Image 1 (cartoon, rainbow, N blue to C red):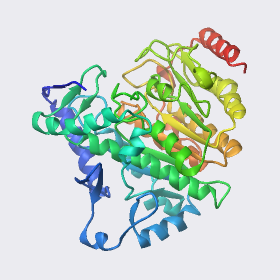
Image 2 (image 1 turned 90 degrees about the vertical axis):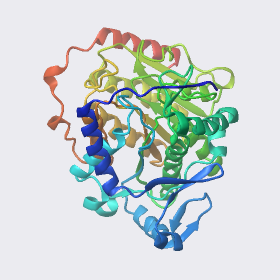
Image 3 (image 1 turned 120 degrees about the vertical axis):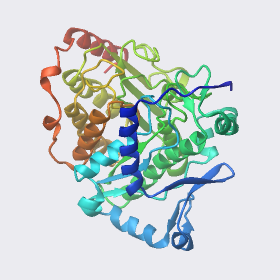
Amino acid sequence: MELQMLKLPTFAGNLFSLMSHHVRQWRSHNQFNFDTKLLGHRHLWKYSSLQRKNLIKNKRGFICSYTAEKDLNLQLSDARVIYSVAPALGHNQESHPESHLRVPAIVSALEKMELTSEFRGSEIIELKNFSPASVDDIARVHARAYVSGLEKAMDRASQQGIILIEGSGPTYATATTFQESLAAAGAGIALVDSVVAASKNRPDPPLGFALIRPPGHHAIPKGPMGFCVFGNVAIAARYAQRAHGLKRVFIIDFDVHHGNGTNDAFYDDPDIFFLSTHQDGSYPGTGKIDEVGRGDGEGSTLNLPLPGGSGDTAMRTVFDEVIVPCAQRFKPDLILVSAGYDAHVLDPLASLQFTTGTYYMLAANIKQLAKDLCGGRCVFFLEGGYNLKSLSYSVADSFRAFLGEPSKASEFDNPAILYEEPSAKVKRAIERVKHIHSL
């Protein structure tokens, strides 16, 4: 794995002020001390002496207090949303769109809009004190040579500052990238455990949402790519199969960019269905409509490139005419979602016209789909989304959809900035994918 040093650009004063505000706000309420202790391939967040006295380890290696574990089990009986937070504050490149401002902006919005346990009690739970993913968890998706190479590269990153991984697109690494990427994958795995546990005791388990970074859906089995380090959704899918016997996993990826890493990880696997909607011609240029899987996995990959300008009307039609019949035919045991919010009309990195209302619709409909097909077992994973306001408002409205509450998208969305969708092109794309997949 070739690495090169990247010189840091000058940091604009306004952006620095904004970053400092968000990070201070995050640190004021975050449960972790972001100094980490390496334990072989794993790391644990440091605890106070009082917390350490009560630590226990469960079957998967979760580190929590006995009291906290009992409380969590009790709370899961009432919860409607459970989320985990891994903001990777140390994984940051100045002026880069995939910055450490993203997750704190979402958490701040959830607090401002009273969508946390502080305001909702056990209806909304933040899952804390989860352990990072193990190297074995990662290696079920990624080559061990890549994983060990990235870990070794942390010494160079510590000495040189930010490094770029050559050939991976604009993916950077800092001295904490390896540890924080393990934490992100672990946050998703912990939610799978919690949602599955709750589904054994009630017919309507909580929806899970991993508010994590670095994102994952571009990371290919052999290495990182496109801002992504480890394939968080892919890792969770393999974990669910192995740890919980959930053989058939349906993955929906509505990020504006094709999830090529997830696509590649399961391209010949008939038990994991990968469905991606993305902007036609956008990075990384993969995800053509005729890419449907190979060998035993032929037919278990569906790619639907949407023309630029596609928006709410297009996505509602796609959901009803493509996503629903695919999922019904596949009969999943679990639904995982690569939730990218960069198809929003305000996002700077693409040119689709999703709105906050579009994301509310997707969250509500996926929740219902999971209830109808797999006992409500569903976990969302944060992927893209680079306008902090549209990202945070849209995630908050997704939470409202999970809760069954009305959308507040009208308070944020501005219909005046939208233009006519390319309905004829959208219709042709939908008809073609339906023909290819016999829908």
